[in-house]
Image 1 (tube, one colour):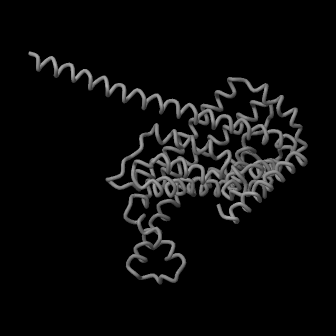
Image 2 (tube, rainbow, N blue to C red):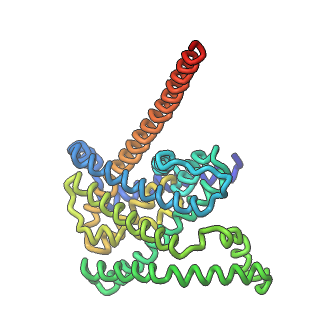
Image 3 (cartoon, one colour):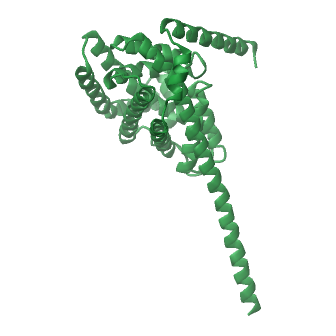
Length: 347
């Protein structure tokens, strides 16, 4: 590891500690009270959080598999849904300690190691998949900003968010056509290579010959991103209810886009401190008291981390059990065929 990476790592750790101290100080977080709240979390509440997390992983898996199906070559093998689910859940679990983009890319690259072109399908496919999440939350953040500017409430945010999502879905097909047209111009040499846009499109020239520049696929990815955002909000509401904190649904939904955008910056491991301060600030803008938001943010981080690890462990156990069962079944079939062959030879 180079000196620069060491310095960046140390700086990130110091920033994380500083942001946590700021959150505790400004939000007046009583860690003893937070621990008591966590101890009172019922198994029923955690089970609901666990199931929502499974749904979140499933949606992320389907997004990545959709991109992988359009990206991979005929010689590449497609990972099964269970394998993809397991590595996606592992990526989320690793994202507790690492930037989520890096963690997910690492997990999926490892998962496609024996399936062909793992770096492109694992890392590049993940970044492309997550770009639709960022696109979706950017439009939702605009809806939240409009609501805040006009001092609106839940009804205004819901209408603005619905309009933003409709705009995204309607803009997908014209955007894909525009990218295809520009890519053809680059391929034909009609655009100067000095043009920065042309250089970017040239680097993505392979996409023109794949199934990725497809309006139907793009709409599917946007729809899955919208559903994923909804699940994230439901998980956040569930963690608040689990510790006895009431945060209105629309306020949570309006705050989450800013948290997702902040997590993309990856200034600290797993966005620790950055995500919490962003969520507390955003919730405060929409009417949630600072102390309430801070208590929830700390408890949410812990509950979400435990649920991520739990889902990843369960998925790994199921995958491991299946891999043990299949070879045994294959071995049993081979033994049966050998016995039948021996019997026939004897006759």
